[in-house]
Length: 414
Image (cartoon, rainbow, N blue to C red; front, side, top):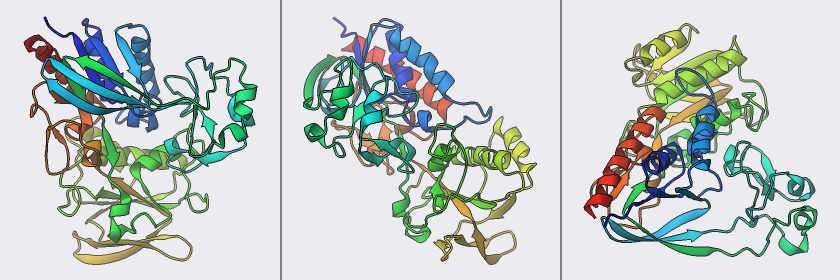
């Protein structure tokens, strides 16, 4: 008899898509996410390209699909520790970390109002702070508060416990383990920005006003640390001369060999962010080539109307001066001259590194040289989205749907 249950690991756009597509054709789905909310990287993005619309609309539609479908079991703050068995019959061990806030939480926020402790806001990459008990992000799903146990002083404070009218705060909540039996596994844990700390020639993350492209998304967002105002992190000043550096850690034998395929379009989109706020700002792109193929070429041509400066060449070094201005050394291949130019701010187009480059699956699957999962190396376990290959939201959704079809076939064969 077919095991009509599927484990989906990762609650970003690929995992959400896989969960709802599988559940809506009758399969029981366990959606496991390590964060305390669903949405993944998409929830941190300000706007999609090329339409320049916010992603929360699409996420909310999918959240509604999840809420209405009893076949989808969402398990947040959870990690898959072990996968044993075979196609059609996998035994999975899942560790569920404590939220310290129960399902009874109404999201009223009174607990955060009285909390005396602050900690770095991971959702905004540490650019601002939250309280030790906090809502992970403005559109969190589930809309429940969580306690950072590394910052919370526990029972010695207890103000959040006292103020919670529905008694939803549990400072002694333990970690738990659950076992699942499923017919197939879809691994959709997504991507991380290639770490700037590994880019020694770009300052290894110590150049204050050289930020990653995903960090700029938070700066440009109205729900971000600066309420959508793009400013220099070092002093909050408005950047009037800003550079974008492509392929920061990508297409590089010393770092990540793969092209992330979306960084060029992301940069073009972010130039639009800058120009909408600062029409007179000078913008420069350092590039090897601009990958804006097919329908995206129209968007590229639209952005070029801003009269941006394009320097064909990959910077060899990025440093800063005493005023925290960013200095970029590069060869301009079009004129075959080495340039040394100074900017208020630089945005590094860090590539998509699969989460599996740092954390492997608890199963004997195969990976390519950059750590992307090779689907099909273990029957019944399939990769979806940017853990399989770099891509935009549309291609990630397609990848997730394809993985669902393969997973369904596995449950039947099993």
